[in-house]
Length: 85
Image 1 (cartoon, rainbow, N blue to C red):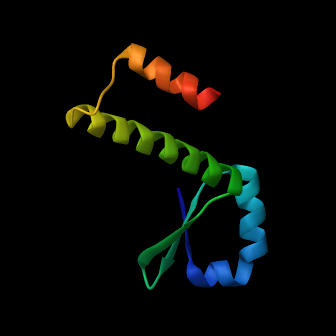
Image 2: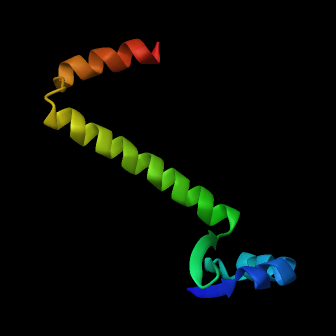
């Protein structure tokens, strides 16, 4: 992964965005030598958001199982049938 100073981002924003669009490789932005932000292209960001949403759903399902909040397949089919009407 590439690292750039925040001053470089300020001076060369358009150029960095063009390079980012081509390479799809995130750029770590540092400020005073400390990581401050990641610069990522829109498609990669949106894909990460979709994955995060899916993983959060899986985590909620795992917590439901641990808490005993489960239903049988028959009950699930009945609920789905009601929701799909």
